Length: 121
Image (tube, rainbow, N blue to C red; front, side, top):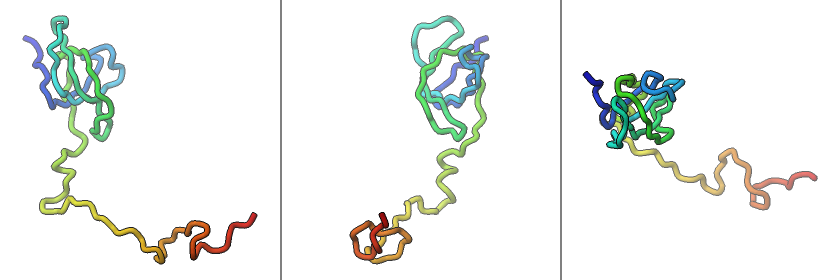
């Protein structure tokens, strides 16, 4: 019996069991299984290598044995979990820029009113 083929959206852990190229395990999100000619028991996968937060960092095409693939546990929150509680606004708060006479704690540019004395040489 052959191992099940991965599908688009699967989150995998690629290890040496899948291919000798993976000395250290790599988290991988499958985009698609390529229909390229290959050896029996191997498959080409197109997808993204993920970082520890679950964000895509590189697009890769890998040659692996489905029998050695491991379904990776989810460590990053899903997009629904990132959105916040139900009913919460997802719009960003926009503040107006400081007015010209406001005290923002920043020094004024040289030559502008309120800039203070010129720097000493």
